[in-house]
Length: 458
Ligand SMILES: *[C@@H]1O[C@H](CO)[C@@H](O)[C@H](O)[C@H]1NC(C)=O
Ligand SMILES: *[C@@H]1O[C@H](CO)[C@@H](O)[C@H](O)[C@H]1NC(C)=O
Image (cartoon, rainbow, N blue to C red; front, top):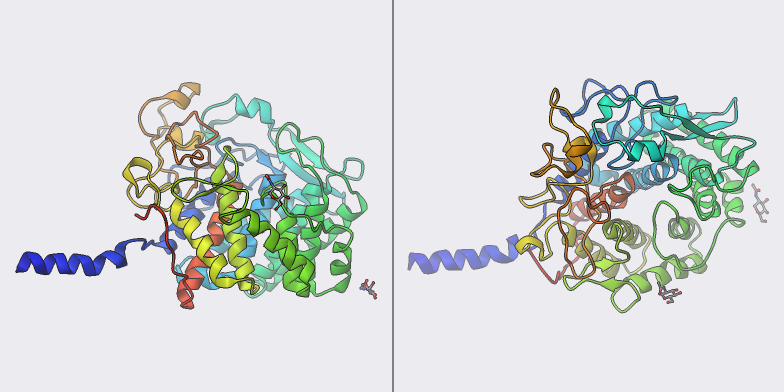
């Protein structure tokens, strides 16, 4: 009798526990990932005990290290900051419900402060890179121990880079909206910076070619479009909206990422104008991404775009799907898809017997060996050298919140530190992921969680 009772109890609990994820916890951890990427002199409230001051002599100190390396690359940096700012603007209540609003403001101020230092309107000069990609990538060790030269690259009147300048203007303008109610003076500073940087970029079009072979951009119109749209949202000034007419591309995007913001601009334009042409572009994108389109699906249901860091393109699409749903585009369908994709990351997969999280630190099974130098280094005074990249055993530090590159198209994945294709972490990998998590907590708060049906439920 009592056994039957217990069985009955278990059966009752099963549908509740199956698929139940703690999205707020995943969100909190993602914030910690960005805090672990901090460069410069760390504040006293630094939440990452194994990180300390690093590269305080940079021409522009502060900001975030790009990935497992320690370069500060302007394009992925601004790209991530723009998506993160968007998530704070649109899903502030999600951050609030998760008890993470203060942490999010604190995290974002770090990167906005960096942009305010990197852009010098008086000199018409934007610092777009700190560190030498080749030299940096030959180094394995702690950021705190680095003593190599960290040369800086600039966009200026004679060296165009409207891709990075436009993208940075977008991040600052979005940041000004995010900060408006919290600190109006700071929001004004960001907005003034965004305006002057956007005007500079508008007068000096062209992509930045000095960054090659790292993060070379295929065009600057998408970032200019995003910059104009965020300035329009921040100011209501019609001239910015007019500007977008010369930038916007109505083609269906392949994905949303550091190089291609077409989809983001189409979405922002649809939100602002409610014109069908923009809606059709967004719908065309998701037609490709939803089942039956031309994005590959893994057996467990991950929409898999590409081998190198598959997860980030999916995560960015999930965030955009949640935003499109807020704009009224088939909300139930778009939300269901987005939540299912995030569920895959948080355990609804078959790796390691299932319930494996591709977000480090979430749940009980997650990557232990991301391609990340700082996390791989033991505490000083133990040395950390090139040997550490291949050292056996788990990385000594858990890089909380980082979403690793992701599985192959057959769901296979191995947790190997040297594998930067499947197991690196990066600023741009986490941005849409975190935005989607904020969106999902928002949906929970307002009682609009869709019913989901993951193929490999945890
Ligand atoms: C925006 O474009 C419209 C139509 O071309 C024009 O009438 C209007 O004056 C422009 N507004 C600004 C502020 O440039
Ligand atoms: C996917 O299909 C669309 C048309 O629906 C096409 O424009 C696009 O090139 C296709 N993409 C790939 C990667 O096959």
